[in-house]
Image 1 (spheres, rainbow, N blue to C red):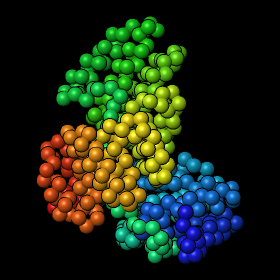
Image 2 (cartoon, rainbow, N blue to C red):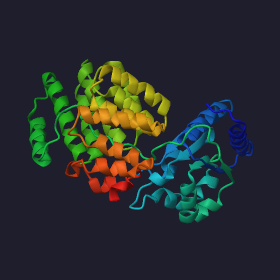
Image 3 (cartoon, one colour):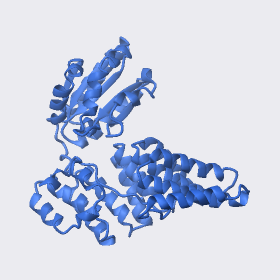
Image 4 (tube, one colour):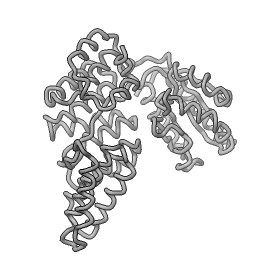
Amino acid sequence: MRKGKDFTEKIADLITEVEFALQWKQAIILFAIYRSSHVLDDAEASLETKLELRGQELVRIRVRSNSSNVIDTIEKKDQAKSVFSVTDLRQGGGSDRADAYRLLNLHREYFPEEKIRAIFWLTKDEAQELSALAPDFWAFRHRIIDFASNRATPERSASFQGLTWIEWPWHVFESDPETALNYRMQLLVDLSEELEASVMRAELCGEIAGIYVQGKKYSDAVTMINQGLDSISDLEIPEVEARLLLALAIVLIQMGTYEEAYAHLQKVALLDEKIPHVFSLLAQTSRLAGRRTKALGFIKKALNLYPKSAFTRNEYGNIYADLGRTEDAISSYHKACELSPEQIIPSLNRCAVLASTDRLDEALKLLDKIDLSQAIEFEKIKNTRGFEFLNV
């Protein structure tokens, strides 16, 4: 935790503004300009401690393409006891990834009407985009506090959310998903309702959910997993329950529901901590939710259990990239490639880190060696933050 005078004074400024809003029962909209993810982490940790003393909870909101309306998250919380810390506006949905800005502009009246207390953490680019794309919301601000000059730690080296792939607990990713789905659905219909068939029913539900995930039908996948859990609710079969809960967490991660996914994964760890990828996924949800230190602890535990897991090594690289530890990230991605040469995602992540640290020539040289015909939704990857170099 940084303790520099400049940083401390700016945290005090934020707290003072929030205290006035609490005292007068009014809304407060603060814009905090920052440069490094380390500053954000330390600032949120400091704010969280100080707000707890005032009976307030710091609610972290990370904008993603499938959750670009921050008001949806705010409405689910106890607003009287919450201060909202919003980041990653550039991750908003839409073809230009600007939905988050437009939604703020559209619903700007919500903040003063509901007396919302919110701090929007903006990079300099995001600040410019917010003023241009949401000028009315920009005008609602109460104060701008500049943390960008505070550079006690190095900047994050790669401004991207590292790519991952799905390791489903059942091997069902087939070339003809429709046929595979129909076959398993018929098996499910034909199954006996007797208790003895419960485990087979649960396993089929897990396989069917995997086919839905393959087609990005996440709501259908959740429904099927819950059906599988219901089928074994009267039985004590921890290994099957753990696999279904792991699958449910994987789907929730794809949906951007990280806190719920984290809760399910914790239960999986209690049921069977040696089930593959549980700690890797706990690390992934922690990273995506902005808890990088916790993510690092989980990924180290995962590596102790499965040192030869390419999935785990790739996530290790993602965490290192998020922490600004460039060389460690590159090394982790390289190890993932060695463990699973057929998987191209670690190589793409490695290229992204190289490109983001002014090593574009190295990135493009490595890119030439990758069989991009394997890439799933390559056009989408090219338009993901941090992977713009793929358009070169």
